[in-house]
Image 1: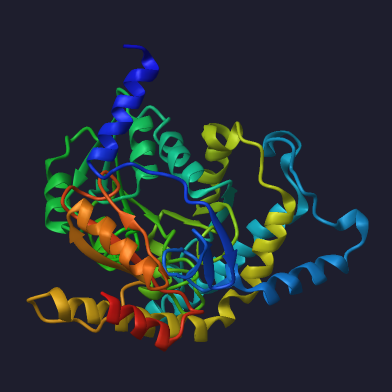
Image 2: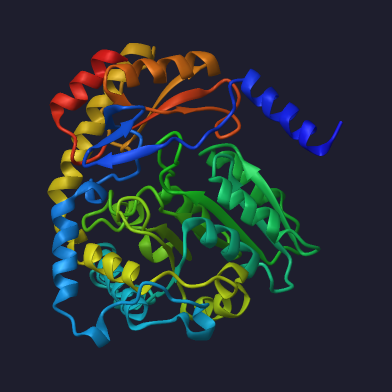
Length: 416
């Protein structure tokens, strides 16, 4: 049997197990996608605020760009790494504006938490922008653990695949990692208690909003755990919370007033921001360390300056998008309550968690069939199967966005 024969056999096994993936051929039309000749309402995208489908917003951006002199018009390619000639004024301005956004929010947090104790004010953070969330998560942890000191990384069981890859790349003679049960902070505390005495640093890694389940980490409890051991640092990925949660959209850390206690605050621009790229908010010395040790930054061509200009354009509007965030929360709560009432035997909570609402069916074939049924009645819904999610937890990952209406939500609920 040739190598190609073995590959084909393995692919056939995936098909047999209903785990075979294909890239869907799509066209986009505002809130809709055109798939297999049908115009379907998009309930699968991470475009939480609907900015990616807002053509008027995009036209306004290009009109603003057209006001610039040719010498200042953002280039279409960076053509090299930031450490060579890939840096540009748009990227520098984006990092500065993200830093100012953080600082404004954390100052408000400090005033709320310690109005009479200026000595407790949080230190300012620096911002470093990356090409994607995957670039960020596979690069930050290996760079942080490059210093030869004994380190233990403790990660939530359900962190994103990019974080898991970063953990694997971090392992060496002085670094180990363990996984604590999902959102089980008693288990996390036990792992900390069991840590060897010669471990000098413990990095706790979590998402703030989990990508497949849509539930939240308890950032306030994690901050309390951190306060009990000087070795602990917190790494929080806000990919699915940035733009969506918080008074100004800065994420769950802003909403829970824990910004100042998180050491490594990571997020992306490819979801609610409807752009591309990612960032870390961290101490300035950490930024300098990453510039010298983060391989996915050093050896990647930077993003095009025009992308950074668009991200800045969206960033300027983000604090004013509270009505969109409120509408999104109401839609998401209505959908999650409807699913819970239909399938849950426990009390239904009306607390808003996120726009991600999992419709868990368990069986792969059943999940595929349900996705096809939803597509047949006008909804672009996709099945999520193992290994993306744990075995026997295949699901339709339903995602609300701020451009959907209450009628859209009601029609969807009727089809579940």
